[in-house]
Image (cartoon, rainbow over all chains, first blue to last red; front, side, top):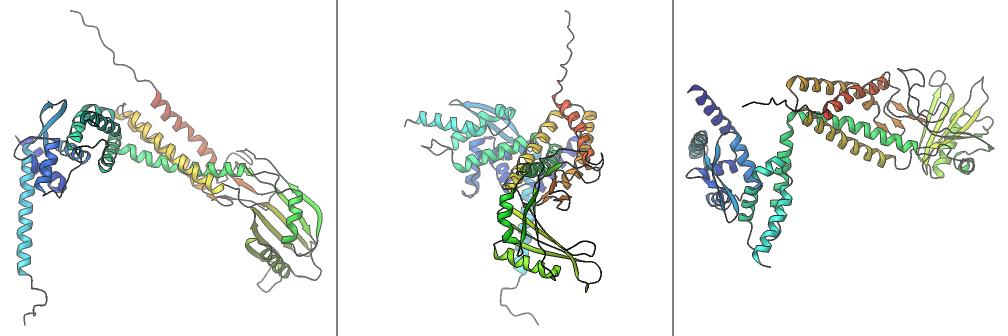
Amino acid sequence: MPGFAYRTINCILAAMASIRRPSFLILLALAPAPLHGYAVIKEVARLSDDKTRLAAGTLYAALDRLSDEGLVQVDREETVDGRLRRYYRLTDPGIAALAAEAEQMRRDARMVTRRLSAARPVGAPRPA
Amino acid sequence: MPDDIRTRRLARRYRRWLIAYPRTYRHERGPEILATLLDAADPGRSRPAGREAALLLRHGLGRRLAEFGRRAFVIAAFAAVLGGLSGIALGSWLAWRDVDPMAPDKATAIGLAPTVLPVPFNDRVDQFGRHTFWNPYSRNTLFGGTGVRAGRTSVTGMMPPQAGVKQVAAAVTRQMRAHGWQDVRTTVHRDGPQTAPAAFAEVTGTRAGYLAAVQITQAESNPSALNLDLMWSEPPGHLRDTILGGLAGALLGALLGLYTARRMRRYGPGRQRAYSRLCVATLLMLAPACLGNIPTSTGSLLANTHRNGHGPSVYWGGFVFFGAEPLAILSLVPILAIVVCCVWPQRAPVRTPTTA
């Protein structure tokens, strides 16, 4: 289906251009299974070794943006102890965007490693 | 405090912060966000954390702003600039209008004269005072002036015999500085080359809110004369009124821009294009007067205090700027058209009854 493929590529390109750290971590948190808001906050904290603690306002702003970009969608709703829990899951373009981001990071890491290994240690004599 | 009471209190306080979000969004997502906020709150907390509240406010307002759309912000920004410029002009004008048009009185002028004039002076004092005038067509429609005219009190001094204009000006300057007049300046005019004797000099200075201007003239056709004019230098509270007017104007302009842009979104593309054109027309018509109105300490950018006429006058509106006033008045037409479109009730969709 060319239209769907076109939209998917656009979504991935848009996502690759603009994925920021919190959004990346949210996509990463949602990768294995659908999660509700609080579970996303906990998972993001765990994945980042407690370095990123999402506030609810930030989480829902990011979820709105990711939904608009078609990378996540609502999976189901539950009410637990009178509290509404809405579960979110990755869409196919979301999975593709996350994979593309991971591939980009892998390439970047490889490049950094290669360039660092080629670099002279500080104070080393210049070759004649 | 029992947990359920604390939680209820926390929920109530979070709900207050959620008011920052637009109503429809709050209706749809509010319970879910509230549940997450309560889940994520530290145990024992009965008040929202400061950071959490600030983020709710920021994202909520951001969401509200996003609902208006980009065009609304462009319109609001221009409306804020125009409103701000009009506001500062109006604030300045109101401050000048409050000045007593008959001040300084004769006794004050006689009291201040020895602090300015180093020579004997007449006890007879001329006073020119005129109340605020509102005359948009003082000369003709395209070159009118709307403003205020402040009072002026004049004292005539005796020009010392054999003294030149420059020497008298120097003596006046010394006298004013010695008696605490601030910002004392001297302007000398010559009829001819630089080496020619000065024909006219003016010394100005300010003290206690008054501007003193001493004109010293020496010409063959005119016997030597020394004249002191006393008038308001700047109304008290001029700066405050100008700033307040600007802020109020900018705020009102921005709100009007946002409101009209939002209301016009209910119409189709044709009317929205017409709305954009009306906004551009308003901008073009109001901009000359708004720019001319930028206040200075002596009036406005394009129309300063005129001390050579019958008294200092401050034109509000830089409206003496050629043709700016009629354009500014005409800008009411597109503004009214926009307002009418916004408040015009929308026709309810016609429902055709169906028969079984």
